[in-house]
Length: 285
Image (tube, rainbow, N blue to C red; front, side):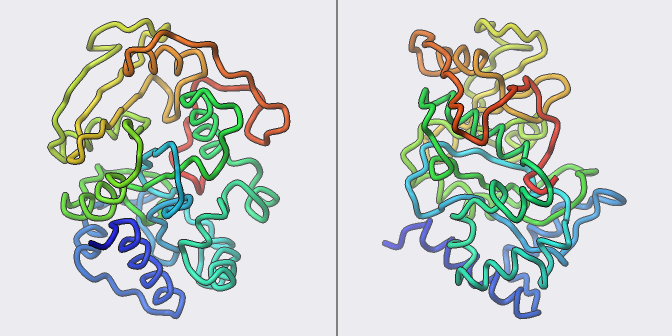
């Protein structure tokens, strides 16, 4: 039986190669997936930019899986067919090989755009959740709900269930993770639209679990694989909770006693002041 991750990697590699060659096919279910979002103005979606369905090493051994909404703003210098990332993908030979180099956390992106707050926050969360200050880029895998770029989201994301099942849930099901994380209230709406069973309500509107942030809400949904989708949001934020809040959340979800907060690793590029909120909505922001 073919691995879902291998199959999905091959599909997106072929799709990206065709797109780089100047074509733009949308075989099913991509056509319905693309049409499922109808943003306007700043929320208008573009196909002039590279579709980015996942970020990280899809065929590696990630210990953390995070869901994103979409890749964010289209940056022509990087994501157009003649952009810097297109040249890199051609050099690496495939989208998969390129995505496994963590391009948003290295040059030329960081040299031009500065440190990537979105990626840094999720890598920091990975370290805090795992209790491992040495956790690094290969430990984090991000899947997008909608793989095409837009400056913002001005309409609900309502992807076809069959697309999410095939291109997101099935590859995640092969990974040895018990929890999958999504940050921001739109994922609460998405989980309901996808008819995922709700298993727990913590924080605001649910059972108290010790969070010091009054607005923090946590909803736990069951994925088809039996894994848990943990959706967290709080006022003014589309990012993960702080280190101390992560410890409380981990204790509530796993039943373990709260453990000491992971100390920042001074050699890491992802450390520094740790914000409680991160309002950026995608990697390319």
